[in-house]
Length: 356
Ligand code: NAD
Image 1 (cartoon, rainbow, N blue to C red):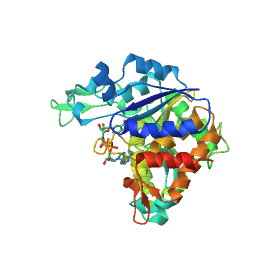
Image 2 (cartoon, rainbow, N blue to C red):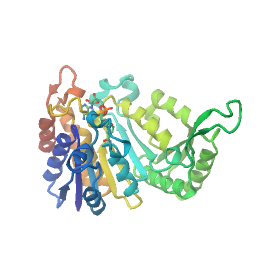
Image 3 (cartoon, protein in one colour):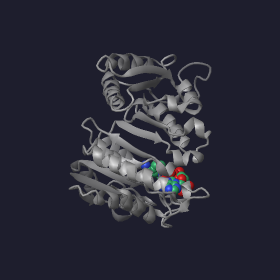
Image 4 (cartoon, rainbow, N blue to C red):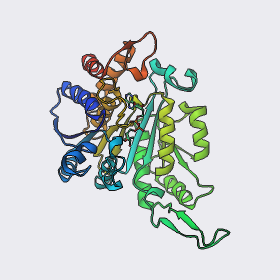
């Protein structure tokens, strides 16, 4: 099993090192090879996603990614910005299914902006379609408005579109994920207003016939946003398009209170995937040894489960993370009075020590 390790920028290398440490401690035959990506790659070779890095990512069974981005590259032309590396990897590896679990460990319930009884024990999975929708639909641009009261003025426009095959494949992924959990799937759309999402609803309902053991319900996106903050524990798995998923997954992430705890996976049709924490490169704390490595360690656990077929090893890591939280160890982002403040390295070491 070969893993491409792409540490990236900012806190990326610090947190990736902790995940590597945990993976090595599992005693599995995992081959790991690192390559530069993002600003680090630009500094070395003039491109955020060099050919050699892309080649390694394509050859590997899975990619473990830290984070990219640094304000010092903000003035580069768009194609050379560090963040383009992640978009390039998604495109070249055809990673169309984005998994964002939002789990709130009972020990961290105080970190959420919602009342503990509403969020404590939260465990939901948001699946976002990642390569279609209005973010990629053509035509798009700025043109002269052809009609209506603003005719002749400049107007910006984008195109929302989803092909049947695109909806079917993400629906299959979502139903299969629900089968492995509480067997409940909510498909979020805007079928009351948008043709694209009326079609989405029709196709998701059709795919449902292959999964009679999963309970499917449909929800409009505005209601879903409301329910996420009103009664988030009612959801099990949520599937939605690229734009709605972008917004809802960030809202769900914040229910848990700490961005430093949230892993993510982006999968292709064969379950090969790119695994990364949901947060960015945190340049404000880079090099200080205080970044929370748990989102990256939990991303490594997702990698073992989804791409490397090692669910029992994934569970070992997840149990170890629960254990260190129960022991009261906290990086500064999740620190509360009465707990023990630790740094990035110490947290990684504690997870290794807690593996059974
Ligand atoms: P960010 O997620 O990097 O940081 C937001 C805040 O959360 C900061 O205060 C940071 O210190 C804190 N934080 C983030 N991760 C943490 C961790 N593991 N432990 C403790 N605290 C943590 O978002 P930002 O500041 O908006 O962006 C910084 C850079 O990251 C930008 O260049 C942005 O483009 C990039 N970015 C990259 C990715 C990615 O690589 N997938 C995602 C988002 C942002």
